[in-house]
Length: 259
Ligand code: NAD
Image (cartoon, rainbow, N blue to C red; front, side, top):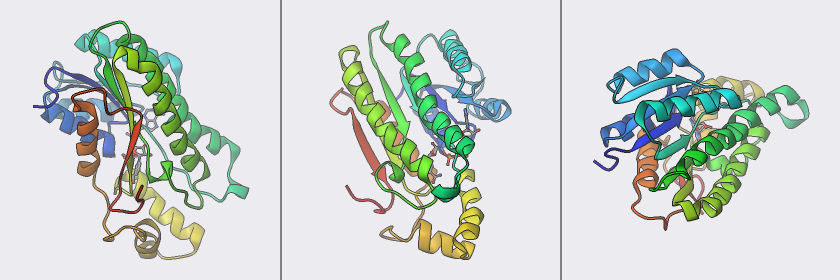
């Protein structure tokens, strides 16, 4: 049990990658707060993990400061502490830059960057007031390192998270707080399922071609990364035994991007 008696808040954990991280952390003994816009989904995941005493769902729009503050307060009230934050909530919107609606640009940056900032700020204030430090993990992407057409705000936001993690690593060090970024390749979650027909339309190719020749083309083996691959990487960062591992980003992408 690598996370016995630890408490983790995972945003966007009603679905996909965040949900699997919650499952793996719970398997390793952590108590989990599932913070998601989708309250019904958050509550359902919390029940799957054993319900009150083991996991709770918290309604939270990560772009809303009041909701973030209230959700973090609920987490501390329920479990007494927070040791790990996984800032994972995210969306994707694809369009060429010259047609990208400004409102969609702002919405994407708000969820990925404002969400990471607001949850970090709320959790740091708690972590700084008690011994033991903490671990903050941002869900980046290969798009934290690399660009693709049609994804301007996503690539911009995911690059930005690496900058945020480095600042948290520097400011948090004296309080024992570490910060790192996971950079997955394509994972078949609802976020990606939605993109396949959208990209097929934008690029004028078949959905099979989007998967083979756009999404997985640069991998070494034509394989999707899985939610389990990403969750095990999150466990590695969350349970690492010292403050040596901070300000880093790790790419998990079947070799799509090599550092
Ligand atoms: P998903 O759509 O399965 O899950 C995203 C979750 O975030 C949902 O439960 C949704 O309700 C929640 N969410 C959305 N907006 C929110 C908000 N404002 N406040 C709180 N919760 C909100 O997506 P996923 O594929 O599991 O993606 C999770 C993260 O992983 C995202 O940051 C995404 O960019 C990143 N990522 C995904 C892939 C991939 O291929 N799926 C690859 C690299 C990185």
